[in-house]
Length: 120
Image (cartoon, rainbow, N blue to C red; front, side, top):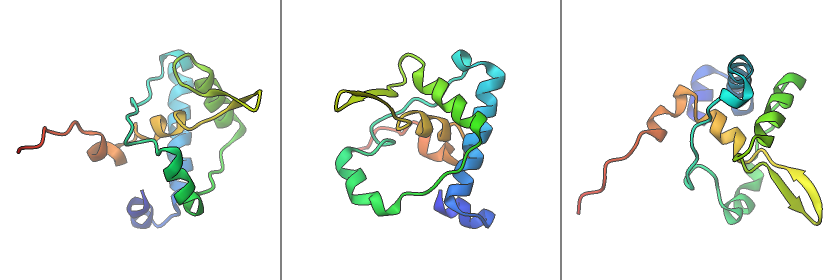
């Protein structure tokens, strides 16, 4: 992602926002229930211990109100794991929706290709 942003002459947050906006537009055109996010695997979503170590490397993403509404709708769709109960309160997390949307972009085509089994 960083290399692509440098190549395009932009920041990672801007590139990320552009991709999410594009995917949100696609979701709105197809209808939220018909929009397919890339299936996530453990290697795409960092564990809690990884998040703590990389907290200083987080980026800011600025999205339109419409894009945020689309993210909210996708998060609440069954199977997207976006609703959590934290300290007895209902919370929304985009932890699974955002990576699933980003992985639809061709930038990640190489990353998401099925790998051949390793030879021993």
